[in-house]
Image (cartoon, rainbow, N blue to C red; front, side, top):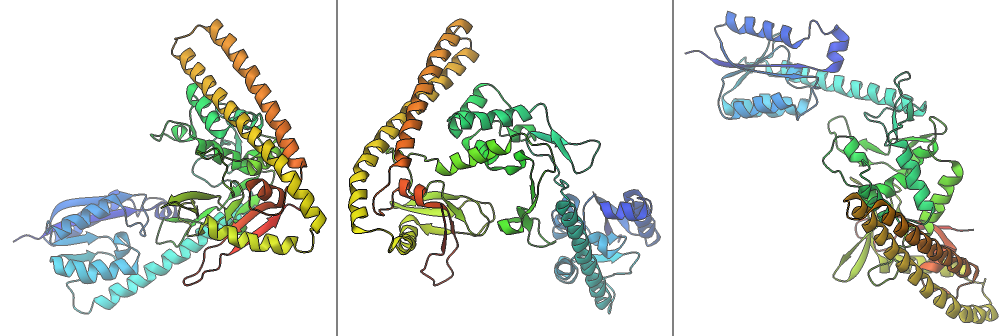
Length: 481
């Protein structure tokens, strides 16, 4: 009875570099294993190979197919050049060579380092090989990490793809240069936002004009601009010429899952590439974002809108509602940061505000501020009306773009309507700016937790995650003065 044998070969990039791609090549591995099997009368019934995969990658396609066949009893022997070709992880050595394969009736053999699960007393040698391979992975991971860290600190871009609006410099590795096809789009987004156009409306305009979005440029299925995509661009300071890397990092060399890293651990190097926007534009946009309020369906802005960020990763907190209770939570992928109710956070902030204001306000000033509060309330009401009017004009502009693109309206008629809508929007925006100036100049009353007061007193709030069994909200307030 012949023994059914499956051979497995693997070649990683570092193997090819180290040996010039000759001794370790897939074809040479197969030739060696075929000859070895023929000398012993083993019948090769399956061949598997993974090219350009590391020994720590558990998702190798041929590796997974090999294991699936072994579990189904399709072969009696698995043959590799070395044990490290199969895996470099001690955990997988123990799991498969010393547990699964014996239960599945599969013998594992490696030619060069003489691993053989059918040989008594060979287990210690296999375990020693596993430890050596594990140490190799650790050293390799540390070396790669050190190289990447050095390149980041030197201001060299190490990503696999360039940031939207840029392309990799063909003459200088690690350097970014503006991409003529998309750089103008980034500049247009910043210009539109400074003109008072909302992030949602910017996305609608770009979609109506058929402008390719970042995911489409990377070959992904999502072809639509969204407000979140626009927001990400407006928040990215790489567009002002500052290279920012290391926002995310893997837990260890054994997993590719990235986690958000604290902002203090990011690598930031100024003036590494040509800026797409000026410093003045960047500053104005960030100030506008911080002051921006997004009305709810009832026309009221969230109290903490644009002010609250995760203390762990620096990402803006999102809002969710459960049974009528609003919660703030970190929306960064992989981050286990803040999660707190708006009410609990308001109570924590109120304590700090009261402590800050204690001894500052006299009775006469409190009375004066109460009287001014009515004026501010009326101004805010008119401001919300202007905001709704601008939103409606943006919708009309979007419909105009769609009608013109579909040929439902002539170029001449579209131009006349566009001029009319643009003029009305400019008037509404000017009125809104006037009302906002009145509101910002008028002193607000005693603390009652309105968004306007938040904007006047507070520049930023960083919220940490409460520990198990703790009830105190960890909130750090950065004041405007």
